[in-house]
Structure formats: C-alpha cells, structure tokens
Length: 152
Image (cartoon, rainbow, N blue to C red; front, side, top):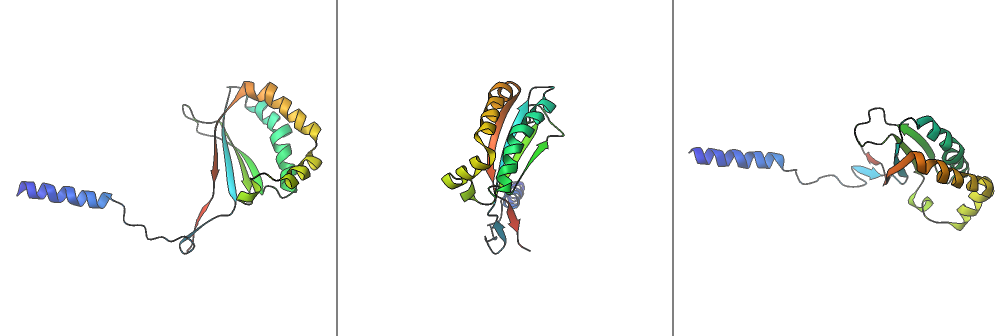
C-alpha cells in the first residue's frame, strides 16, 4: 500500500509540474508588435559613468536625434542599472525601430541620414569610439526584441 501511495504522489506531483498544452493563439489572444527594440548592455570602468554619458551625448544621442527626426527610428533611451550585481551591466542603450525593414540596409535611408548628420559628425564619432569608448566600456550584449501584447 505504501508503494502505491508513493507512486500516486509522484504521478500527481509530476502532472502538476508539467505545463498544460498551450491554448493561446497568436492574433486571437496576443499579438507581436511590428516595432523592434534593440538593447545594448554596457559595462563601464568604475568612475567613468559621466565621461561615457558625455561621449554618448556627442555621438549616439546626436545620431539618434537625427534618425528619429527622419523617421528611421521611433525612439531611444539610456537606462542605468540601479541594482548592479557581480558581472551585471551598468547601462542599457535602447533603440526602437518602427519595423524590421527599418533595421535592414537601405541606400536611400543611408543617403538621407548622411545628408542630415554629415560626414564630419561621423568622423568625430568614430574618433570618440576609438580613443575613448574602447578604453572605458565593454559591450556585453546586443539583443533584438519585439513586444508581446496580450489581447483582453
């Protein structure tokens, strides 16, 4: 009898731990957004937070302001990790694109951006990356995501 009860308890525990067959259907119960979010996680050398932000203002933010004004991106933001633990990132750079198509190569978008931003700004940004960023930061990862939106 004890063996039967033990077997029954294991079977019950296993069935409770197993996920039920998925019942949700895309476009009925949830949708996946058209927009794509690019997340870049960055670790900084201690004491270089403000230095890096200053560099971003002159490079990444300036370029994203132009891209946003042209409609190439929807938005962007910088997020600081307020509870870092060992090996965690310090900053997250986030760019939201209207669609997957806006991530891919496009000569028309490239030409439009270069006309608005200018080669001098590109050259200056590249110099900042080579001389400053590579000394004070490490990119830990780049992630591409889409929001999953539940339908009520």
